[in-house]
Amino acid sequence: MAAALRSSCLYFLFPLLIVMMLFINSTAYNSIEETKQFRSLSNSTVANRLSGNDELKHEHAVDNPEAIASMVAMGIRNSTERRKLGYFSCTTGNPIDDCWRCDRHWQRNRRRLADCSIGFGRNAIGGRDGRYYVVTDTGDDDPVNPRPGTLRHAVIQDTPLWIVFKRDMVITLKQELIMNSFKTIDARGVNVHIAYGACITIQFVTNIIIHGLHIHDCKPTGNAMVRSSPSHYGWRTMADGDGISIFGSSHIWVDHNSLSNCADGLIDAIMGSTAITISNNYFTHHNEVILLGHSDSYVRDKVMQVTIAFNHFGEGLIQRMPRCRHGYFHVVNNDYTHWEMYAIGGSAAPTINSQGNRYLAPVNPFAKEVTKRVEPWEEGWKHWNWRSEGDLMQNGAYFTASGRAAPGSYARASSLAAKSSSMVGTITSNAGALSCHLGYQC
Image 1 (cartoon, rainbow, N blue to C red):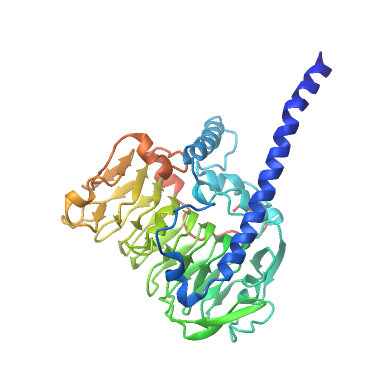
Image 2 (spheres, rainbow, N blue to C red):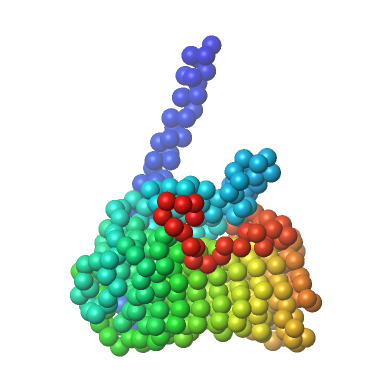
């Protein structure tokens, strides 16, 4: 009988394994082809080439995010139940951190981090399948011919790389750090600042993980030649001075960084970027924090899907946490302790799904509203799908909902199951770059 059962199981499992292998091969092929197509576009004509009324689809945008939510919800429930039973004393209820931080010897298996993302950017593997690259040199003297051992030399390589740092360092970039596909910047174990110069550009690439950096005091740069791969460099016009600029890219995960005080935005994602997770970051001392969507007229941003989870929006912030256009945005279990104008804004009919966040309004009686529509007339925005579900409103904070209340209206803006807003303080208590020491639990 046992033999018959094993035979029967194998009969059903074998076709399933074949389908999975075909899917993986197809995904890898599509990623390579997309990268080739991106690199063929001219920097000066990108907006013209990507605009228009062509069919708005993106192979990395999810058709059924509810399935993702179900998978993540199961993982969260399992983690929470184990914690209740006293099994892992180091667990916090933050599913990303609980995936890797309990391991005292995490530095021996750094690439495990790539399996810990959730939300729309959950498939961002970065340089998981490549070798390690150790940054030993803080210099950035020649953006066209970077020295081996520098961060710029690492990020432009054509092969997947998991980039780590030999020691604490402050890196002041002369020009934008233009990243190539399949790269992870992993600053765990050291104290690394990208500051006082240009910052990070993720343009027309895929599979990027940025983890553990201090990014601050970024300056406008440009009108210079900059290398983007071993075989290509080109003229870059003026950059705005964003901390992290995501442009026409997909499968991006920005996790556990501390960002502040840049010339423009701290994180911008525009021009058809999608499959993005922004998690566990600590944002402080800035005006326009996060921009998601290029312009009201750029309809290709309807493919944009972004998860914003477990972040702490802290002192000295004014607005855009985030400011959204067109796409689908899941804002879940974040701690909003400071804003001066508003927290979440938008235009061009974005779908915003706010779940399990804590909103602490400022003292100013005229700035209690969490939300801001750029469209001034209610007739223009009353059909936009904006909802607040399970959010904790404090000090007079209030969220102006609109559109349809039915859960189905937010299916494409659901990327993971929210925890109770009462847990937000614990979940976000370690937001920002972590103080990890080698050989110790992080």
